[in-house]
Length: 242
Image 1 (tube, rainbow, N blue to C red):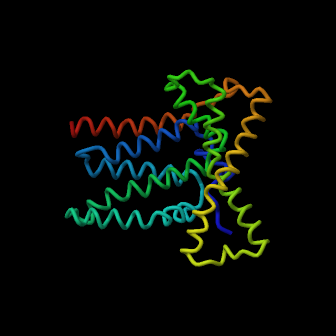
Image 2: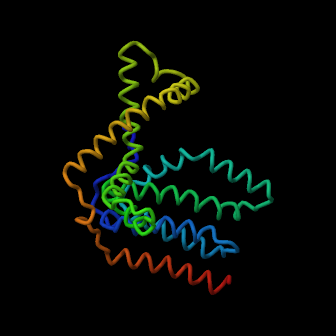
Image 3: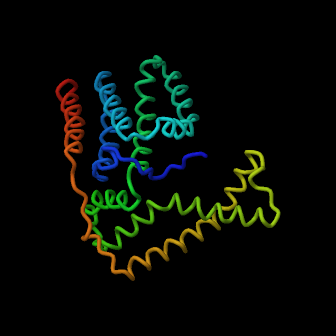
């Protein structure tokens, strides 16, 4: 059975990590990897650190590989574009490898974080940008629905496809082009159902007087250590390049 991109319950240090910090890992990794005039050893050290985080998650590597393979056309296109600009294979690899690991790090966040905790992590990052004064709990509910959007979409689309196949339509056994066109045609109906479902979720949370102030994620020692390591790489870049 194909493993979906969703939370996997395993006891690991990354599962215990602060959700906001895990999102920071992704941001810092991408920033450090693509700084202008960067040094090869800083990029490699950055990649090694993220690879260690991936291993620490205890999620089988085959799950990460499956998600990376879904971006294979982008990876091939990157190599072709870089080659057209006369980049060597090693230079191209130092650009493409961070992209691959960024995909893996994104998957790590999904695999090791409950959707609620992930929404809370995002909320903790954006609440300081709430310049329009949106109610805190309402802001969190919007983020929570956004985190669940992909899963809600998959569920509602599956229901529609199953209902149509019961009526005699052949959808799952169409060719690639046929399935693609079918999925495109289903978008308006699926979005309508997802919106309705998420409105119900929002109403339930409001009815139960959900208060975002009742929740707080704590920092782990490993969170601080890894953040310091990313910070060290940025410091090295500043000293050596600037």
